[in-house]
Image (cartoon, rainbow, N blue to C red; front, side, top):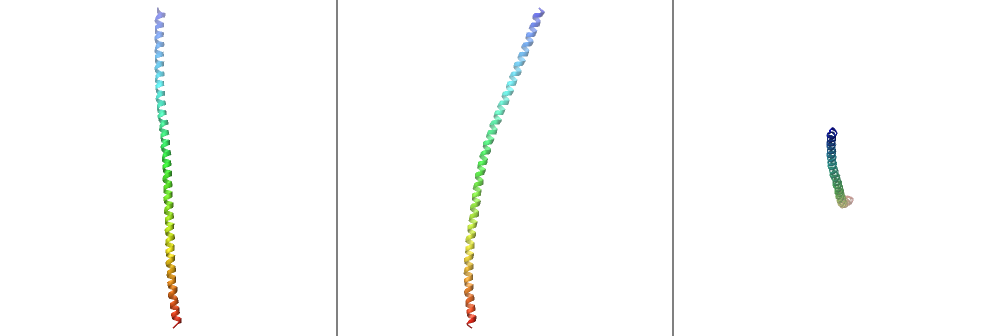
Amino acid sequence: MEHEGGGDAMGYRIQQLEDKLQRVERESFERSEESRLKLAALTESIKTEAVSREILVERKAKEFKTLESAITLDINLERQQRKVTEERIMRELDTRCSQLSGELAITVGGVGGT
């Protein structure tokens, strides 16, 4: 009878250990599943961030090109305006020099004729 009682105790102990092992395996599986889900979420987040960053880089490149074009246009406009102004000043100088030459000729001619 002791043998049977001992066998029942041993069987009970084995059952307890098997139950504990199953519980540990289930908990381990659940933790690994949680970790897998977190990793998947992080991976997706990284992909989304990479796409967002790529879009931002493209947008900034377009903004830079637009700004560069605007600055180039402004510089060319300033050059053109400067050229027009220089031409106007040169015409005024030529006109004034012609007037002074004429006045000088009259003055020199008037002095010599007296």
